Figure 1: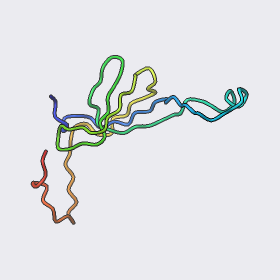
Figure 2: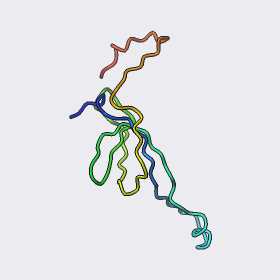
Figure 3: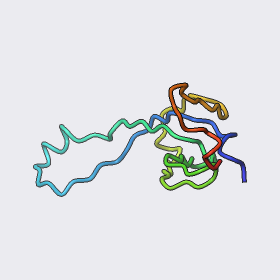
Length: 102
């Protein structure tokens, strides 16, 4: 498995479906409801022909707790924010980064 540090961080622009249990007249639905233009930022974990998978909540270097599958047919664009991994440690911190699991 490719480690997280070798993954791109991307911003994905895509159209999301919406649903509602609210009562509405057909005229109001036709005039006001449209697909939502959405943006997601995360680690690009999977890039396949038909879909991508983003990871958001990461433990260590491999355990992903929150992920999102986006079909490529609804993606407008993908912008690479960062290619690979760069460790940034704020100088004010008293916690050593060596105490964390990667």
